[in-house]
Image 1 (tube, rainbow, N blue to C red):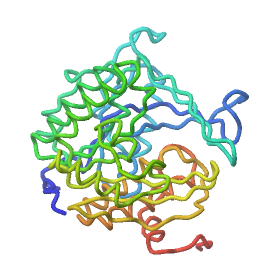
Image 2 (spheres, one colour):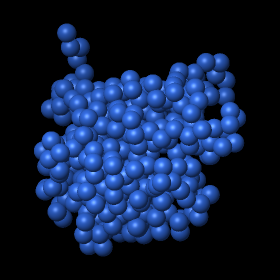
Image 3 (cartoon, rainbow, N blue to C red):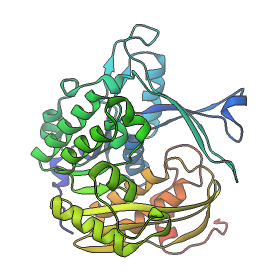
Image 4 (tube, rainbow, N blue to C red):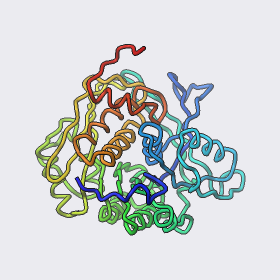
Length: 365
């Protein structure tokens, strides 16, 4: 597939992401409600993609976000620096000390085990990035003067606030203006959209964004909720995949949005919180490509698996331009990411390619 990527030498960054980065507090094997200590991580749907591209695949990436200017914001910056993602595009906001003006997002996350599912409890209203508007970021400078080959954002960020919707649209338009490839993860969360207009608002915003997207990530439910497309003969959703129905739906979406060069989604069947079937598909040029099936994949921490799929997919598309390679990189990277704690990937490119090649879990010495 020809994505018409900008030359590497013309750009400061291989990829830039826009979104919220939260402080994740993890009770380990325990419960949030009974914890006496938490392990701290950073995480956020769009940021996880930039970090995966940097730490696993060696690309130069940056995050466009905003933090309240306090000690928690500085902690978040330090986490991001440890992940190798450029922090120079962060917008810092003054705050009043108790979060009335703005604050930093917090996400408590239980990993789940067996019959007990993973559980998230977030505090992300009134955050700095939810209050940031297009005037807080110089997108002409980011995509024009500095330059980025790829730009990624998603529906979790867009759903934070009306300002976030406006900023996402402005960033995507600026990226396209300068020839940057755009990917977007629909990632529909009805609870997040409910405060700013619900399903109607989600469709209004996502339909506008879809006009500028090159690589769209989203499953059947995402396409139905955000863009209004339906899949035929598949009442169980992608849990029991109807490939013909999905392909027909995506082809119709590509007819409405001829700018789509690829559409991808993960496939997950949850047997228990710690045992899933896992895989992925990618549509391009009227054809669906399917990854290897990872049957009975043992999960340590499922949060961020989809984001690691997205970063693997993006790497594969940038490095090879081949949809089959891309979906294979994405599925393998997502599978590995779910074997370690935290939102972000701890895998290496070598490990991803070994999994793609069928290498087992024997001890390596």
